[in-house]
Image (cartoon, rainbow, N blue to C red; front, side, top):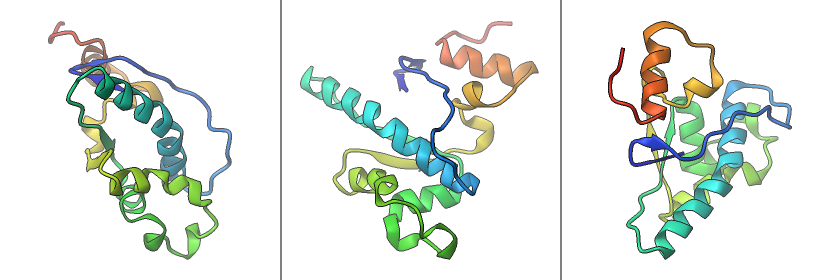
Length: 134
C-alpha cells in the first residue's frame, strides 16, 4: 500500500487457501488486502485527508471478476465463495476503484517475484521513495 509515492504497508505471505488458477490466486489476494486497505482509507478520511483508494490489477480476468462480481464467473470458477467478491461491493459503493496496470509496471512484483537487474533496482527505489539512484 502506498501513500504518495512511497510504500507505507507491505507484506508478502503464503495464501492459506488452495486455488486452481492464477485468477483465483489474484481474487484471494485482493480479498486479503481489502481489509487493511479499507481501514487505512477510512482512518485517513477521518483525519481530514482526501483519499482516493485505487486497486491496481495486472490480470485482466481477475479485474473483470472483481469489477463485475459473480455475474462474470464462468463454469471453472463457480465454486468460489461469495466473500471473494467483496471488492466488487466496495467498488459499487464508490470506496475503491480498480485499474489495470501492466505487469511490467506492477510495483507489488518487488515483493512477490524474483527480480534482478534494473527492474529490481527500479521497483526497489519506487517502494523506498528514492529518486533514480545508480
